[in-house]
Length: 363
Ligand SMILES: Cc1ncc(COP(=O)(O)O)c(C=O)c1O
Image 1 (cartoon, protein in one colour):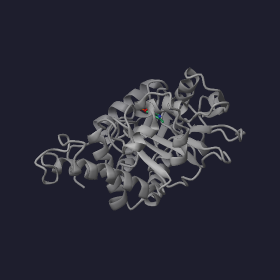
Image 2 (cartoon, helix red, strand yellow):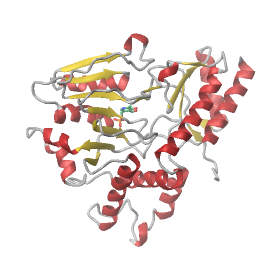
Image 3 (cartoon, protein in one colour):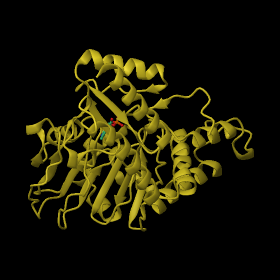
């Protein structure tokens, strides 16, 4: 693949998109499928856009093995709006809403449910160890309305390997930073959401997967644009949707299906990438991973060097070598390599080579 002057992009989000997707966008940008218009210019009420959104929905369902009991929605406001839409729509009178707190994003989700005055129970947290691990000991109240968790913690670099078992209580999951990175059994999930800008597209919408029975919970007394039922009833087009984002998502899903070959293959590649970079970290005293080994993320690899000055130099020198976005989140410092689906093994190998070289010079 000719990378031209593109860098290896390790940004956490917005993040790298597959090059074939960008090239396809470029090819059909000025005249979308003979319409004489760009996809940026066609009406969302046109056949062209109808085909785009339907393809995005169908491919998402096929990739995840979702049956007709699930609806796929595109909702603006990012993953952050979902933090409040979930309790607004899916809490049930007289029942607790349960949360597991594994970092910044879970904390924000919890805060929104509290602002809305819901009966919030945080049944587990890894805050005692600076959110460096995924908690395993918790008891789910069988009468709870739902259990919310964050499958991948973008900032702290932890990820649920095995999802929590909540019995019959519907799981609600923020999959913003690992959706489509691996297959999973969708049946225990009442709702899954993901800001698009990490693994499936550019910023501007959240992908929401909702089990149809959950729609029966939506109360009357909330504004139209905050109701899941509004989006479900209108194929996400009650108002003008984020057309270009949805178009890009449809191309990313096509790439996953037709070029990668599905989520089993995607997971294998992601495991290989993780093995290479964690192998480098574990084989060195210079780099220290910040997440507990059994909770490590295959999407966001967080690590430290011996000193902040070295970390600064590492990030700057990496950039000179065409390896960008390695600075840790501003709230935690250190370094972070986000290796989402679009980051190839070649990118990870280039990073590992650089890390070894940097250690040789500075270790
Ligand atoms: C796990 C997770 N949840 C939520 C968010 C917030 O997403 P948005 O900016 O789309 O609201 C992020 C963003 O980085 C994230 O990583």
